[in-house]
Image 1: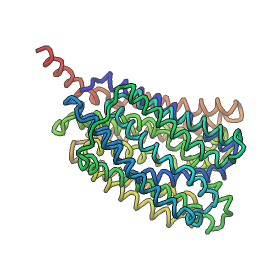
Image 2: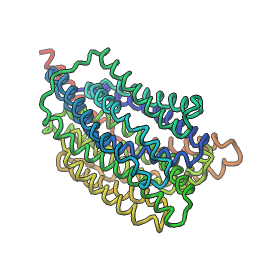
Image 3: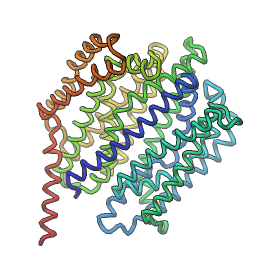
Image 4: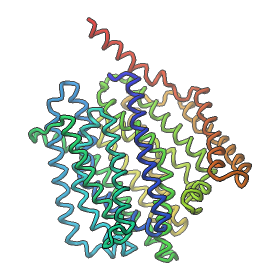
Length: 507
């Protein structure tokens, strides 16, 4: 069993690289929005949404299943690992070819689907990256399952760096034949292929091996619910990219304004809103192979892992609500030179709580082999999201996306927690969980007070840093004082297991 120092180190490594990766991606979006405008950002986000939908269809659940199976197999010597990788690669690539063969012949029909005719050429350019993405995802799951978190996280950052580099080369007119908008798509394709090649070479350097293809049903069956869940996510992304601009136009917006509004929300506000998931996602990455190695009858260890993870997600969400609710407009005005996206961010910041719980609880269910339950819960939440996204634009405009997302996440989180509670008793002290949320509200007020005192008196960067930083530090101090995140309980079972294992080795 991994000792507590190892777990802390793993989370720290994944977090550091994830933060760096998201920072690179965020700065790139800042550049694109300033260089090309919100309308181009909106078109690019629509194309990305369609690509991610197609990528989800290509057995996107395989990496999670393969990483879990590798972690389990490593306990008995890892003899089946080469076969697992080979089987996953064949299945993943086999799922991509039908997608390409179906989409390309009917591509000429797609312009009528998108609200902006500029989207289709980007989609056509980007789709071949599905092949390299499939290779990348499977090989990366090998590092994940072996808990090689340094290599696992480094390759994600490398992907972002390559994407930025190639996109800049193609979109800034360095190659005359490529327009800036198409340059974004070409850069995406080339960087994806380059990253897959680098990862494959790294796999061989680390003495990764391929084996015979076998036990296809054992690999395919558990991956289908996760794939279906991600297909739902892809459908929602594509659905939003297609439907929201159309509905905004229907209810009075000009086409260019609809694309720009969509770009402001998905390309400016949403990256900031999803920033906390970088931290909770780092914990999720470490938890999947970790929980996979815990015996299912050891409910004490399972409960400690789950409770600690849930409280961690709530604390992270609270920290960012303290920042975003009062300072959303100021942050996006400083970063993007855009106020609307910041107002949107402030108004929807409370959805960080269900988003964080949803992310952590879904990862834990998948790591416990409860993929079907996870998919069902997600499908219920997704259905609610889609219904509200269709019904509300007439009344609340672009806010329909946030309202639907928040409602869906609340329902999915509730169902996930209920399922986890049946496997291992969780949230033994709900008062602490409630306190973690309630403590954030007076600190939101403090942030507002500091903002009013400091803005227009000192430079915006320092005003944001001070008025947001002090309340966030005070919140963390309060969490320590009230022992909301009980580190001792979270890791005591692991330490006990490590001592037992050490005693056995001495004998």
